[in-house]
Image (tube, rainbow, N blue to C red; front, side, top):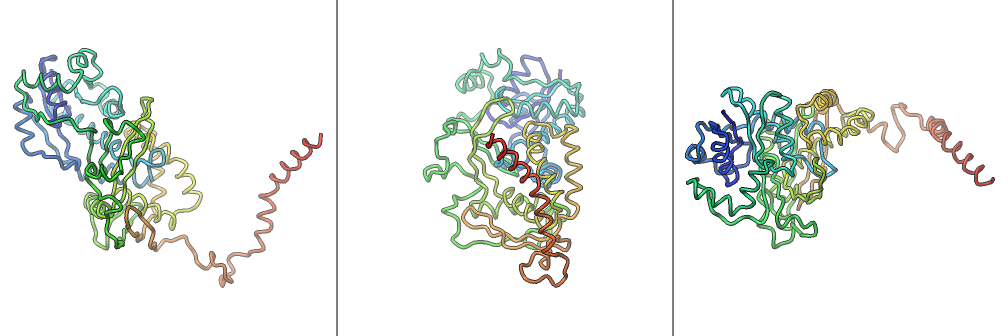
Length: 410
């Protein structure tokens, strides 16, 4: 048997690599996706091989992540439950897609992951595999009762590594877990499981990695311009950049000014609520500026229709249906809505806030001559027409009011 394992080199996946090899008598192929987590990857190949992997893939997927996953999602204006910009959710389909590709190349029998049976990631990995390789087996050890009984905690995992000669850092467990990529970093579990715990209190400043606390941000605001073409940001401050460079640049600018911090309680797909704290500096700027560009260039009814679909689109991403036909159908609609979303947005970044400082477009639908409160020199809008417009829209309200009055009089 041959298994491709999602591998990070940490305690959990080191145990998984060894345990799966022994339990299944399998040849193990370790895979680590570089999606901008900026973790120390040096020595990972050697470590995986010493742990028992016959082959190791360490693939830089950052460009693909930005171009084919983050940017299409941003064009859709996706945001989950009004707050979460889906940083972890959108990364999982890419990782699983690459695992499937490696499995095909290596003629592997299965892929394996270390996601727990309580979280969303197990669903995201496995729905992606089902969409792209329905015949490929997926092994999830944390849903195996035998595995959970053998490893009820960190202590037992460290002892197992010691017995098997597996190299792991015996560092103290962190009071929360972290997951980082190009779009964001998330913090959850541990001390954060108490929703009353103040993650933004001064004593907790050391937790954050991508941004300064808003109160510690520069006292002087910074102005940033973003150029858009068909819904995509193609330049920052006048410099043309590909998607990956856009994200990196906006992350630095946003982090400098304390932008993009969110603390929320969200609804997991598996049924429970969970508390998460997120830093999404660049993504927050991009999401905000994109909306400003749309406000100038998108037809009202098209925007209304697209906006009505944002919760569904975000839900599909969050729940792991990136490669599902319904998400692809929604994406096709989104692409059509973006054909005129082009121009420039200027934002002001100041102590955690993002503020509009200007917007312009060669295909703007905003007409100051129509919108002005002064006399309209074009005579394109006759204010007298509003009388009939209001009368027709008020008709059903008047009918309903008369019926209610009649009922009260009985």
